[in-house]
Length: 452
Ligand code: PMP
Image (cartoon, rainbow, N blue to C red; front, top):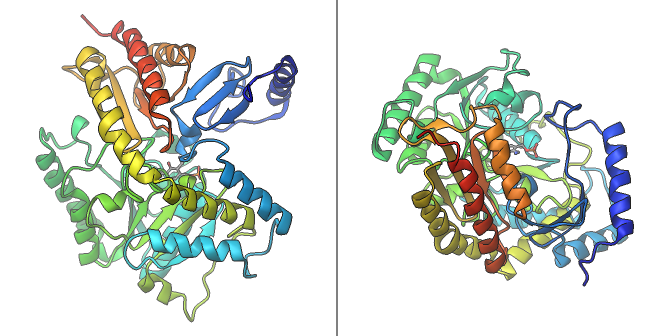
């Protein structure tokens, strides 16, 4: 009953839509043909669209609402902080910020004991690179193709997918290398072990050819997210860590999407014995209820700035509302065992369901993932692996699959030829199974495009 959407809500939504189309300039879109969905209300893993239809949120928006929408403890913490102190300049001490930093430093691995707060993921990546450059006194930065690191200038330059092309000034000191992506191996590998070994050899060669002594950092999504949730093969991340350490290169783990429980561990690097020098986070740190990101940096990097000023800052670094939301989010995740639940959902519910779909649907090229972080890669032909939409593009066929998901009552995360299954870590099992059944039916639509 608390969910009832009234005619007045729908009328207000229509008015919002008109104003949006008149005045709001949207990210990543050709503004003219764009027909965004109106959201009237959201709660837990449910969202109500402009017509008052209920949708199961398997997208977590942009994979950030890790604890679902409107978690009462986090909403209350934001309200309480708003009543006390909404904002304070970054140079003043604030209890919400101090506690958020303490909690985060306790969760990240190793001696990443210091936290610099930003407003989101892109600026976290940019500051991590700036710290690495100042710490090493070197300029070049290595990052992988098929990656995403953010939409601001340097972050989009390190990004390794087509979202970079229109923005890349070619003067950023960034060198791209080929990732370890076994399903579409660039190295002709047919097994995970081969892929790991060959991708490591490629990165080793590239670093040596560029002059290891010129390289400040390797920036890597611990598990690439929007680029396809392709898990690094065994040994790869350990190999990158060993390689970077050997050359005095900073390893920057971009955990903006994979961090804070998404993969069934607090951080994706926890899946291996890998401790980066800097770790960028955002999104899940407070489920996105108030914009927040940051960099956790090691004691060694911190030492560079003990007696020398750090040349960078943000008006809203460590914003009290955002930090109060982070404290409440992290505490709720712990109290409600959400990271353990994400691991269980991946192992018991999502993984088995997607593998069964892969068995039934010839349009499924590969399913892969861990925790609440899964991708279904759709193809026209399983032998040739020709994708259902080109890399970097869309296709009418993919649009039909997405439309089938929406009309079936699921809000999906779709990218190029992939449907991502990225629910909240605390989604109700029955709701998740309902959403997966809708995906199963939508894949019938995709099967219709498979070449005979
Ligand atoms: N890094 C990764 C891995 C991301 O997924 C994203 C956002 N999708 C970013 C960085 C950029 O974060 P933001 O949009 O908050 O700037």
